[in-house]
Length: 327
Image 1 (cartoon, rainbow, N blue to C red):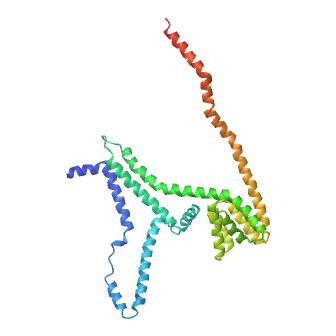
Image 2 (cartoon, rainbow, N blue to C red):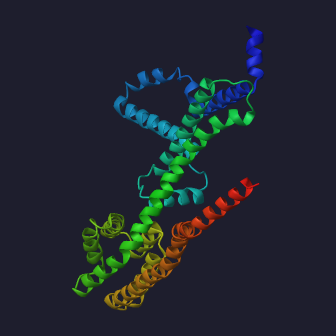
Image 3 (cartoon, helix red, strand yellow):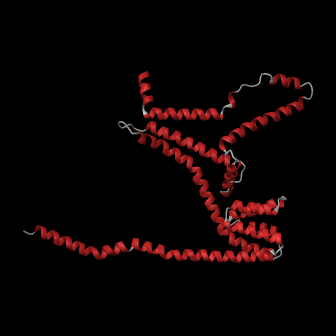
């Protein structure tokens, strides 16, 4: 029995399972390190003494202390799941906002999802490896592939999802921004202020471009809350991650700084955006003949060659076959 167990541990499968179990054990020990501490034996005595003078206030203070300790534990988990440096944390937070996740725990949930799905893929790979039929002696690659593939898929699945959401959101904002500029110009020429125009355009764009409408409503709400307008516009440009919107923010800040007309600045910039949209459409139209030529060559020329050259090839084959049979 012991010899069989030792032989199993000495095999590559046994080494893989042992390393995996050891890694999971270390992770669990790190996550639950403070839970092994025993309670303070004098805590109950201090609570009983506090009943005599100001018991209720002392209880409230102790409950606040317990909440602080719980928050410290959660902060320790946050350090495990979030980047440590402020620059990395701000970059991760910005990436999650650009993907449409605005909650405070978005970065932590993102890293937790990568960790949980990666561990789930690892366990799934080990189960596949254990129940896989053994056909003689297998190589290390054939044993590692069923374990590594689900692990990598589980780890990179949240990354793929966030990048996909970010790209779709930025594409939607880019497509809706020229229309929003035209609507802002109409509202400004009708006599509304910039804040009122942004709030109105945000309501009107909900059906067609919900991502851009959400960003404009955020700008409106932050301005109503008393935040500096310049900071609000700069945050708007950073959240969207679009060069055109950052240029628009720069134009609005310069217009407010130097006292020029907002309507005139919007009219000039909206005209530039319309010209840019026409230029992009012309570029796509110019690329279209090249793509059609490639498709035509791939799907038209081979059948045409078969139709034209096929009978000649068949005739030559018949001639050669008859010539080989002749005495």
